[in-house]
Length: 379
Image (cartoon, rainbow, N blue to C red):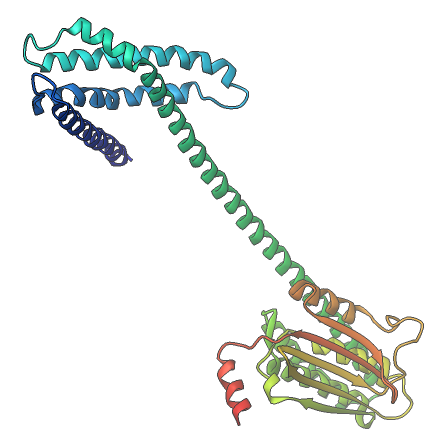
């Protein structure tokens, strides 16, 4: 901090020296070109101009302090402007007097008349000194305004960053809450199915379902990510389907139509399980005969399309939400949290009978998957 201040004032001193030298050169060449008698020497030229700039540099800290003490800001300038006018007059008198005296002291004796020189300089440069003073004050206020503007921008950017992080944390918390609601919902339905089998005395089926449920719960609890590759989601779904096939036996047939290009696409974890559960619960379980659930996945034009079909009674014609429960409601909420408006969730009835649930998401590949997809496309 101290070095920065020294660097600043050394720059001011260097600037004053440069301007003084330029003015001395102008005075020297101009006077001699005009034929002034006696000819102006370099010593005379330097002594006449350099003191004014060095004294101005010395008075600069006082002007800046006064500008900070009495800022010309909206709401205050009517009180501070008269004070600056008085100080500007004092500055002009002090600057001209000190510069004239120093210039007179540097000249050979008898070459200048100090009083005549002072009165002449005051009459010629008094207004210029006032303008110089207010130019310095104006420059200070301009730089101070720019500094405060940058500080406000920086503070606003930091506040926006904090707000963005807080919003992201809130979104993650909402997503985690929605995802955690699916686990007890699925667990309740599965335990209910196990209790039905137990009441029927089907011990082997109960043991099989408990084993599969244990394995599935372990995988579900270990999965902490909000998005996973579709291949992992399908693997988890397969564990769930094994449980349901123990329950429904030959009444449930599962078909898959998964494009190879889609396996590395990112999907929300536990996306398919509530969709398939909804198809089985409201489709297969309400049909007297056997039925099937079909799971499809394909990619097209930067979009991942997932579809779950069933051969049940379909959606009620008067309200497409009549067979939507916790699973579909939470799925819709999670998709809105993750993708905003950049997704689609469609519920419809099939012409051949049954229901169809279609999810369209932006196609986002997992790390390292782009090369595999490119190889598949070229093959």
